Length: 167
Image (tube, rainbow, N blue to C red; front, top):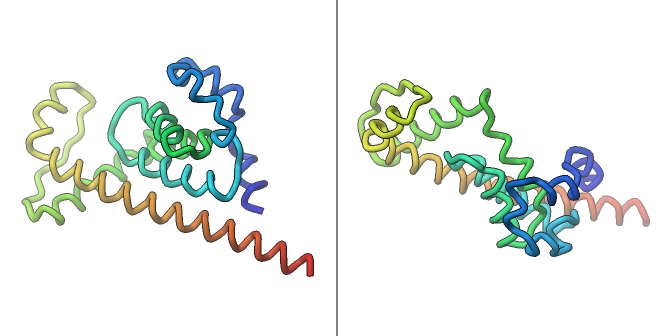
């Protein structure tokens, strides 16, 4: 059941292999496990995608593909899951990461006004940067672990359910 459900939402592997930013990986994209959906590649891909989704950086899809290759997990899942960070969810997610970082570091919460400019990034990196980046890292690890455990459990439950059905 999880395999069929997940497969409906995945991008086509041929399309991903031809993507201009993923072509940098060249022959590394030829590993078969990077494109199949099985109980070993799916949970790891969820972990990679959810972790990179919390990393505040451009070209998250390329980073997710690189980590998927490194850990030999499903690339389409990892790449698709970075879209949890989109223009609608990003402000909420990153503000939550900042608040968590403030709590963990025990520093004072500063006014958080986002401005889409390089000057804002340069001035803010020294003030709100450390709690923000720590919060992103911690939430990335937590969501990656939760995603891995949930998908792994769902996969095992699905297999057990099929075996019970066969009996």
